[in-house]
Image (cartoon, rainbow, N blue to C red; front, side, top):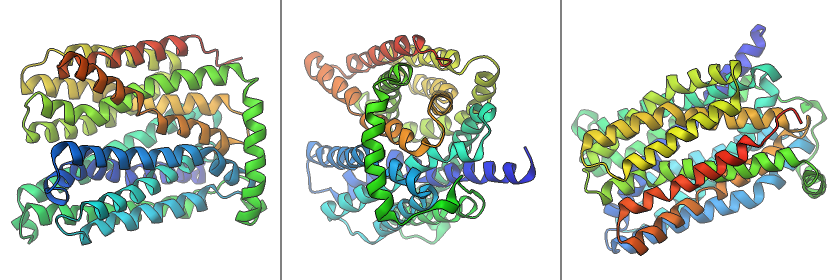
Length: 415
């Protein structure tokens, strides 16, 4: 790569460093706990869980439905970067606004959170699509892995600071733990905005000089979306990949989103769960880079399949764990493969799609990714109710990894 290409790649990856703070501190870490204990303290545990789940599902569903059309708009108008920055601005503002919400105002908190999640998920549609504008075809695996690795270390670093803020609020001149959590949302907003600047300055999408008005892009984009949907019906290998991805990424997302809840159901202390979450972030950083290197030299598909086997083993093992040490070992195992599965799936798909339609095709990719956190939690819920045991519920996730791996094995990238 020449100097400008390297700068573009690092600037693109820096956005993963930026927005992963939201995914780690807000989505996975503090918001679910703080919502139950502070904003929704007057609601029962089942009621607060219902409203939190509804907001996540609603935001995800909206972006899932809009993603392909938004992607088609961006392809038509050279709008990928501008739309990414617009959604990022929404996410940053909504995250900062969480500071202003007082105790007991659970409905306002959940609405602000939902709009922040829309900003986060919407921006990711265009971030993923920009990979084809910064990476050469043969470097997609490595560049995609670099993005995820940057995200894990960036999100993990800020989350570590935020955890220290809650443990020692006096060190930061804050009144108590609740104030520390609320101000942590401000640190996420500032982190997200600051580290978006390199992408805004140094990443340039191909064909940007032919940009058109966004209304015209919307009309053309919707027509292109309809046409591509019909065109996709003849792309057997892409459909097969998307089906495989939908199944196994549902398992990956379910493990990520339900791990804390599962640990609490087994009686583990919240400090154990937060420590395990930090472990996963920092282990995933070098592991994502390593698996990207392996995928580039061996096979992206083979590396994903091996990672899915590890995920299956984790689920089986977790059904019988008894001690905090077991949870830490499981967190380490997930950290070893989580980034590789996500990064290599993105790069493998990028190699398969037609040139010039990256945002639109990644709209479909992200649509499935947003829907792919519905089936796993539902299966876990049903299994838990029927068996009366949380331990049994985790085993059903293995079905998603096995089915997704089987479909992926049948994908022919060269076809």
